[in-house]
Length: 288
Image (cartoon, rainbow, N blue to C red; front, side, top):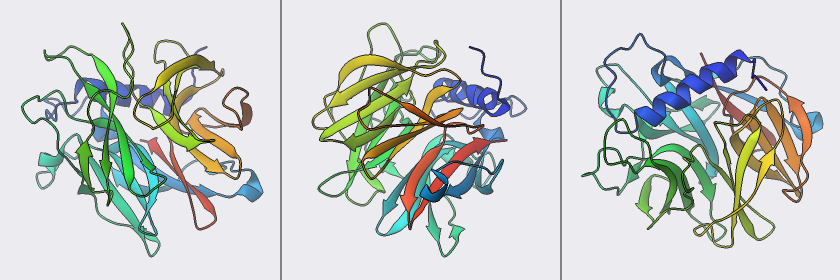
């Protein structure tokens, strides 16, 4: 099915740009479409409205950014994202993972996280972040890495790093999920019903999502693919009571068993990040 939402078309350009720019290389032509032309918009909803989004746009959190993911850290809401600043002051942070905190009704200025990656591999930098709280405290950051040894090639897999403060992360060994003969990126992860659940979009098949489970959040086993028409499994998950909501690109779905999914809403959100905080569902989505 052709996805006709403008925001989804914009996001396609965005994710393609990151797959190619995952080595922090500054673009030669800023007139081209890329993450330096997108921004993150923030909006809220509540369970009284079944977590449906009715606002067509929201307040800008940060410009020249995308791929947001949210978590509550030390009692405050924090948004992580891929940052693509092109100004002289912050150009050195181009294509890094950054974060902002929600403080007294406003979002802070972006700061960069730290990951002890192999700096000798310029194509091995993390991108497409997904943050999750760990049951015993601390955080795990899932992200995409390009394992290709030559520039211009793609060999994508999902890796992870852990942190006690949500700022300094230590890389975990190996891949969380890697597909034979296929690339995987843009994952969403949640802990639910004593299992870790990972979902990532199949960018070649509309409406199809890769699905894997893990008992420890480290070793994942692939399960049957998911399917829902009219959107993409590109977004994030959040739990409310005994239900998991998937805020995807083009739709919001919910489930209690990861087998049967119910449509909550069709919308124009692109790759939304979500978190429950102080009684509200906070949603950050990619826009122009």
